[in-house]
Structure formats: C-alpha cells, structure tokens
Image (cartoon, helix red, strand yellow):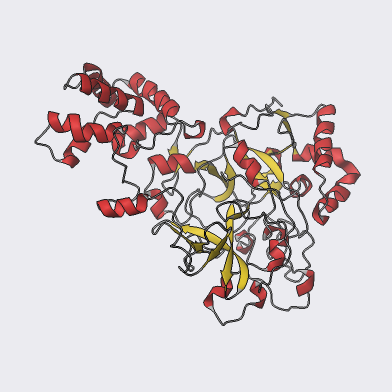
Length: 506
C-alpha cells in the first residue's frame, strides 16, 4: 500500500498465452494471468512491479514470450517468487530481475535472484546464527547494543550476554529512556537513581498512575503511523511480558480468540473499492471481498487502512479479478464475452459465507452470466465508521505480538493495514461514507443514493461501462451537503490517519 503508482496506461495484448489457454507443457503456465484481466493494470515501476489494489504483478520473459503474473516475497529466502492469487505464501519459481529493465526472468542467466531492496537482514542473520527478526545491526547509535556490549558488560562482567539482556529488560525502558541511560552510563558507570525508581514503580501494583503515564509515553514514542520509528527498539525484549501486557491494556488494546491484538475505539478506517455507493446502499451492506482465510480477526475480515494516503493508493485502479463479479452478492465470477460459449466455470468464489444455509445474504449462485463491469476504471475511497468494531492492526501486532504472525493462517500484509471484523451481514451501509476526489468531505452512501434518485441507475451503469465519471459522485456529495444531511469534514491535505477522524453529530 505504500507504493506510489504511475498513471494508468492502455495495455495492449502481448504475445501471451492466457490462463484459459495454458497447456500442460510446463507447470509454470498456471501462474500466467489471463490477458483480459490485464486491462487497466498499471505499467511497471522502476523496480519492475505493477500494482492492482496492493498486489504485485511482474512481466516475465519465458520461452521467448512475455507473460504477466502475480508475485510475492518469500520471507524465508528473501527472494521474489511467482504466486497464485489464492496463496498466502508464494510457492512458485524464483524470479530474477533483468538489470536496468522493468522485466524479470526465471533463470539466473542475467543476474542473481533479487533480494528485498536494501535489505540484507536475512543474510546477516544467517551469518550470526540468529533468526532474521531478532538480528539487529551492531551500530554505535543502537543504545541497546551499546549498553549490552559496553557499559553493562563492565558493570556485570560475570553475567552472560543473555543474562545481561534479561537484566536490562527488567527495567522496562522506552526508547527515550534507553537513550538517556546510555548517555548517563557514559558519564558515570553506575545505574542512575531515576532508572531504579522507574523500575520499582512500574513493578509496584500499587502505583497505577505510573503505568498510566508510561502507557501514554509508549503511545507517543511508538506511534508508528506518525513516523516515530525506532528500528533498534523491540518492546518484546525491552519490556517484561507482564508490564508490556499491562501497558497495552492501558492503551486500549485487547486480544481476540486468535491471540491477535485489536481495538474497538478506532474511529474510522479507509478503504479503496470498486463497488459503487449505490450498490452498497441497495444491499444495505459492504461485504468482505475475496476468500480471506481465518486466523487474525474474530469473525470475517474487511481489509482497510489506517492511512488516508495509503487508501488513495488502494483506490487507484480496480482489481480485474473483482470486476468479473457484476455485484458483491455474486458467488461465482461471470464469463467474459469471448468465453461465453465455454461450458467450464471458474471455481473461485467471492466469499465462502454462501455455504452457510443461515446466511442473511441473498447470494446469487449463477455461473453462466456475462461479466459487465470489466471496463470499469473508476475506484471509490470510502471512510468506514469503525466505532465499537474490532479492528486488528498490522503494526501493533508486528511490534508487540510477532509470534502470532507465525500461527495465524492469514494476517495483514501492509504496515498501515487493519482488519475490521464483521458478522455474516458485513458492515452495514450506515457506517460507509464516500469521499470526494478532493478528500475534503464525505457523505453516507445511503444519502448519496437518495440524492441521486432516478439517476442512480444511469450513473452506475456509466461507471460499469468504463466512463470516468467521478465528477458525478462529487456532485452528489455536494447535493447531500446542500440538503443539510450529515457531512464528514477532512482537511484536504490527504494526510489524515484513523484517529484524526471526528464524526459529525447526527
């Protein structure tokens, strides 16, 4: 979500065998994207990636032909692989970047496998014998490393390295406090009184005020979304389990049935989506997209982002896969006109709730309808009212709860991502607001639908046909405002985060 996307370009058909035409000559054929699905996809950036709703695609030279395929990072090896759209972890062949070109290969003829840009942590970790996440560069500006290797080594020469780590952890220090301790010990090789007092007060169950203050400091110093990042600081090794959990609880975090951290006081989240406000208003709900595996949220997840700026990136271009569904209640994708005579049907599903006979959603099980939205270019940016709902954040779980990523079958991928946990009814339309293109105001989708009146169907059909008509939706938001209905105000600077949203009184 954090990548800047180049302008949309017209993609012409390449000499490319699509997925429906793949032969069984090579196992790699199943990874190639169907040519019709490439319509509207962004051109490759300088690193050779094309993006559709945060997913990475690459152009691959293979057997004298050019193919486009989904790609993902193999975290274990630190290389990119071909990836099926249904996979959580890529399992396909390793990709090799062609030097000074936006294309890739499946052989090492032209260069070695591309590692994560500017990240040799995996290699360094292997050399050190440590897991990649635990490995930290040994630099003087790292207060923890400096303390352990120098001052604390002199203060406690009989302790092992692990014992010194546990000793320092018992003080439960935040980044600013570790830096202060580092400077104090350079002046005088003695643990300062403030550090001893801090340790005693934090451990004392009779001093809740100290925990309250420390929780506020933790939120300020580790506010990852505001840029307060400390690459050298790991709260899982810098704080004891009991104190860390107490501080998280003070800050409003809870644990769900999957042991993931979540909050219920997040005022809003942002989501880029191809569904029109009319469809959401008609169905009275926004349903989750794709078949997310369980494991992170208590119930079904709706993927969203804490950052408006990141949300704008998500709303840059529709995902061709989603455009094969004429509505959010279609269980199966529709057929392209060119494939109308094909009796085979795609077995993928937009959601798995339709298997539940008690589902409140009126699912359409038709497999033979023609997809009518494949030319759509317009995307919408919605603000979701998440007050009182479970929101599972990526960053806080990554920082404070890293082990859960190894056990959860699916977890948010992006730094600013958050999963909104919803029931089988989805998130009700009353909670969904559409932002205008200037990012200055938003209106409820139901109010927009009402303001459109008899023109709603025409506007929606134009959107589905491929007309660039965001101005019509902006005009409807203005009309909602003129009618005196509630309007959510934003600054227009496009830098809001979830906690900045102040909902109008209704």
